[in-house]
Amino acid sequence: MERSVARMVNVIRGLEGARAASEAARLPASLAGCPVHDLKERLRDAGLRPTRQRVALGWLLFGRGDRHLAAETLFEEAQRARVPVSLATVYNTLNQFTQAGLLREIAVDGGRTYFDTNTSDHHHFFVEGGDTLVDIPGHDLAVTNLPEPPEGMEIARVEVVVRLRRKAS
Image 1: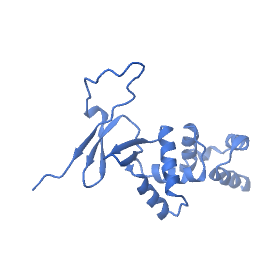
Image 2: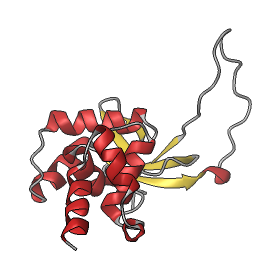
Image 3: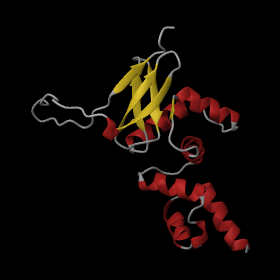
Image 4: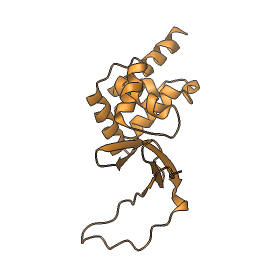
């Protein structure tokens, strides 16, 4: 029993290297479906080391399903959850998650950037004044007649942001 508890503590602490690999091979099957274990596996599969800060921020990001948030919002959530991170660490982590394909970055209004936990093919409504993004399923919008990219380039993705505002009464 003590050995099982010790293994689980090591998983939560995020063991590194060969020791982590040998511990992971001996983990009980009962850890399958454990949210922390699953998050660590998701980070590893994306090529990221599951540090305490990444796991804590990942838990805050992905624990509530698909959503859009700014770095400042995640930083505020981390502070409320007593996760000891700086705003710079939040930005760095969000950028690492984006580069690893775990998040999508959506730039709105030049200086305002949101991060989307839904990485599927879709577009967005942006509610002006409310600073809210709402998903538009990818199949609900067809983008046609795209220009040919310059030689040696290919189109990686097309993102459409449809801006909304309340109707005047």
